[in-house]
Amino acid sequence: MAADDHGAVHLHAGDEVLRVLSGELLVRIGDERRRCREGDIAIMPPNTWHGFRAVTDTVIEVIAEEHHVRDGKQYRPAQPGPR
Image (cartoon, rainbow, N blue to C red; front, side, top):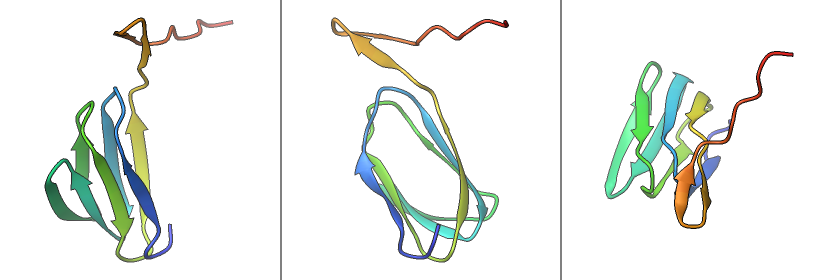
């Protein structure tokens, strides 16, 4: 992503992990803000407001655990089996 691109502040039911492959990000997790550089990992717990902004041209890897809510209960969708 180019410098000044951002991920809007949001939250969701599952964990999310950002790994910075190159560049630099400003990351917000709840009330905490920090700079993350190449090799850093930021972990966003479920139901926590979070977002980020690229300080420089940056490459990140995002790993998110998908959860859904039905009838007020959280569940993970079934994974398709081998075919």
